[in-house]
Length: 379
Image 1 (cartoon, rainbow, N blue to C red):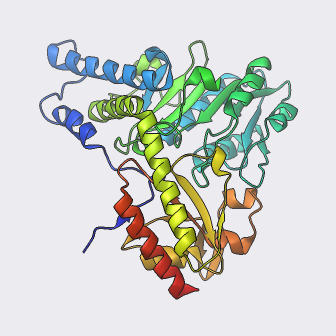
Image 2 (image 1 turned 120 degrees about the horizontal axis):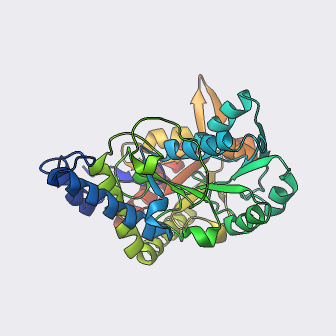
């Protein structure tokens, strides 16, 4: 029996063995509190600062602009709520896209309940935000623009650099959720023109339960929590040293191998798409412009197939995700596909397949066979 072929790297990634090796001493012998003044504590403080530098180098930031959090969701909350509360004297208007992750939209929903107004920008059929729509939506009371760098479902890369110029010209803080893009494509903060950038460790081969928020020097942001002065006073709480060390190592590896990894995951995606087109008994529609898409992400719809049924049939052999969910016999389409105006039947047949740096050609070829065989039986 073969283990399941994992093709859902956008959901989470396995921890890189080099990351595990780097972390292990901090679970065992290096257990000191980083705030302690003796050697055992100072050793861990130095490990945190090393990791901060490793993250900063990956995104082209200053180490003091990196704040460690528990996850991407916390980073998004800190960014959006932090700016909203720090800037409410200027205004209570925020601009976001209609395809943001719930870690952004739910924060916006909460702020709306407190009196903030949220403008959700539409997207085109590929899930792309028009930067001109951003410009037209800006008001004197706009305090924040939050647009994800790349969509988690279809992989579309947004025109972040263009929006960054617009935000700077209008003196508005600009945040991007880069959880899906960091480690796959270039995410240098000065190229993107962002003031805040979210990273989720488990999306780039570090553990779950660790993330970072980049906060550009000089940006005023209100804390979510209050306590001691950890993380330069931005995020109190004794630091999760092993996980911080792991994220630092993962960022170092991503920085070192960015071009090679990006090329590999692209080749695996293309091999998969070509094989499915050749062997599948169902017509295939690609729900993205692959020229402007994460190199590992493939959102495709199979004609006359219910995606959740396909995923269930092959689940013990190939791990993929769907663009819909089945509740009591009815199919609920994802908000992203709805925003892209994907026809209901097409959306119901949509799966997301995402490759990773550990994906092999042998795995891809086996997955093509398994998926095609299942579709032939379901058509």
